[in-house]
Image (tube, rainbow, N blue to C red; front, side, top):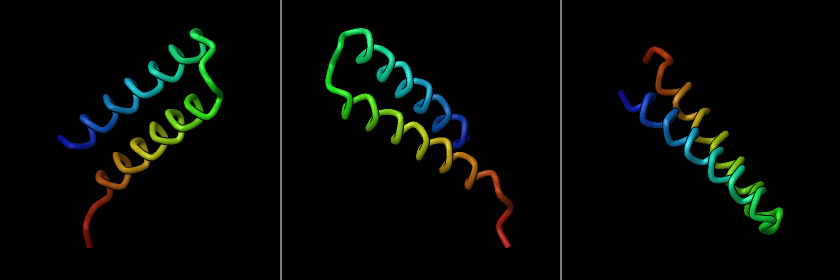
Length: 52
């Protein structure tokens, strides 16, 4: 369940980064949104791994 929520969050973050790109905002804001989206996808993946 949480992995789906995190994947949705990653989608929203990528959309925000693309929106900032169209608005010609500073590059560091776009990069930070992409990094946060990547971290969200990584967390979603790690939650799908079986626990030992």
